[in-house]
Image 1 (cartoon, rainbow, N blue to C red):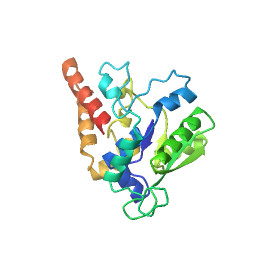
Image 2: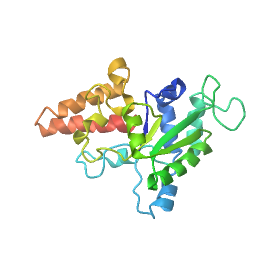
Image 3: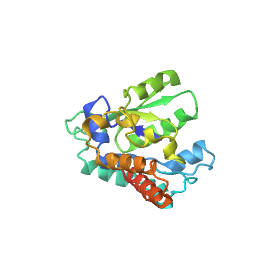
Length: 225
């Protein structure tokens, strides 16, 4: 999973990541089948950011949401979001004219680096200058906890049981989830507030019908956003 930091230290990056069109564009610019063929020998089951197949609230539609490789559509979304190449240097620009440049934190060495190198090239095809910060886990992890990253590459946490890792899916305490540490302070991300309410409701009832209703809503909120 590529976790985008909604509170990235750089204001331009932070604003871009909070733009839904940018997030959707980044997903459609990833060629999952290329990653599958080169790294996973055809054994990968590509998916989006949602619940896994073993989860009782799994949805095939949600599983495939935003996973189509479509760089043309990604370019269209970025253009609509006012992230064009305004200085004609081959890279997109933020609205203030600076280069649209992002950095992926990835632990290495290992297959994670190989994945990120492919995604780096794929994102650069749609005009986003992408850098890799390849470091040991002991360096990458503190940057995650302190919110110092722009994009944090890690395994998707809790797809089979989000209630086992609710701090990654909801505002369970201050500074959580780690990809939106400031959410509690500003309370501007309405969909995350709603997801948090549903997760807490699911954790405080034994009514299985109600649990399903809450968790399916959590699934759809995360998948959509």
